[in-house]
Image (cartoon, rainbow, N blue to C red):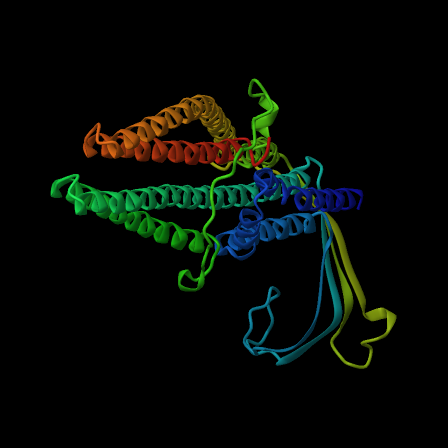
Length: 445
């Protein structure tokens, strides 16, 4: 009974820890301070069928713990037996008789409230270790569920920032379309008064048309991204909309100079493999216990009579109590091979854990290194954009005074567009690698 109580308390403690850990994979995204992103992540975590399936697997694992715990309790069964039997007149007998034909005998059996009870003495902790294995598998299932939450939340965040980068890039093109449109108006007026020829007008109009085509291409790409985001949030794409937005001025900054091992161990996938390793190690003990004797106490009792009359009298009571011991003597080496197999499974899970740990270290270092370099690129690109704008303004003034050709102005405007577009793309990549870093660290710093 003490073992049953301890296992129940363990299961309750695991459920409390699981409830607290469910939100750990979604707290890191609040560092972006974007309410739209927060609502989309909550929408996806609430409605995702894959996440619900993972949660169902957690409930299955918890039920397996309860099944394993049931073997720590006695097994008691009851029923009723009413039967009649007519013995043949020519039945064989152990004592010779003078006649081959015997009297026919009618045998009635009336048994009420028979109780069959059995209880295995868990001398070698086979059953209790089995409960421990089931409990560790519950923790592994919960870690798998948290891993699903982390992957889903990070994918929603990644696609969301791709959309915002697309919005920012569209804003760049719209500003350039407005600038070029005003430039076309100036060029047409200069052509009307005879200051320039037709070729400058054609160049300006062609360049403006190309910008509008590129803007439509970005709009088409945004539609595909929004449809993908709707699927992640388990929404119908035709009814899902996302208003225009922009990239934030700053992103969450990693507060450490190096990656600590404890940060990586918070990853749900590593926690899952760690619990699977512990379960495999405990399974070795369960397999070893199969080579040991199994001792159980068995008993049966009830009321047994051949007639209804004395059914409820004390003389109809019957019982049988005994101890049964089963010892494996020869099974073709099956138990020994099972132990070897269990040890090999432990080694397999350990190596899988080490491999996943290396993957986690690579993911974190890749994201962190890219963020450091990207911030340097963004600073340099910002300075380049300021220089390009000054150059374009200078060329425009020279062109208005008739001191240079429109090709110089057009080249300067194209340079601004390319530099500004690249700057937006770099800031979009910064958002993507920030999401990747949060995911690699298990959802938060």
